[in-house]
Image (cartoon, rainbow, N blue to C red; front, top):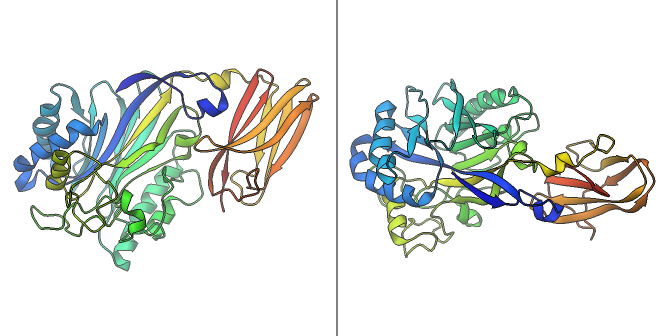
Length: 412
């Protein structure tokens, strides 16, 4: 975990002064039945990868029991960085398991548990970042593998249990689901159930939903398989599936509190040039040769990582007087959103829309206004008349020294 002087999301476009932020790197990795019979042979390769991955919190799948947790902590993490790592509370299910490891002091674990399913259980840890006090619940899963309608139905059943749990979480609590989804396309019913409307809705932070399987258009985000030859178990099909994914709640995108930096979300070791190939064939431009080799030898999956950042102060919230109001309805919206705003005294104001990357989309109001209530509408088009894509947008009202930001969601 690191402290750094950084602008929080939208700081540059919203003219908010840079503030200190707390930052952790979250990673998820399917370890391929660790330790199994080859654990001692693979441990050095895991050490090589984790020495460069930069994770502060690591959730893993295909862990074999508490003995596997102990071995991974002692033989891998403790060797990489002695005394720096801890293991989270562990639930031993009847199949291969999931586990959480973290740099000691990087997070506090406030609670943990699991969701019982007919197959592999879904584990969760409720954590807090100690400096900012921000909380998030992290779920990790390993859904039913393989294609075929029966397998898709089983994945849907697992995701239904998960979605039911997400829908009941406290309002405003950020949550992340990371792991091996084993879905071949975003159109699969299990995935669609997780991203459907509702309080527990999940979002792809890199907005890359599509037909991922055996599709070169998604070569840069494929995570499995690192191999084309058979050794030590695992798949051998080359890089052609996006099984390993992080999905997040809308709170992770709203510009307030704990946020995921979508620009840091990567399939570690994927250079986009190994479609249907092993991760080492012909060299690898994403990582040094020794790390590519370690990824190839350690598991048939690549780890996925992203940075989470939390504000330690909130400049915008403190600048909003009680009489300044910005209300958006309907929200989410499909065709047109009405944006109502109130200012308590005459003055110059501007009402601007930004996308999730902080780019200006359009200006809805600008000039001198008397005190009172006003409204504008947005039809989902930018100032050039082009249709904006589905996603999260932000409306920012500035009146004199006062500023307020509200989120709106466009669904096509």
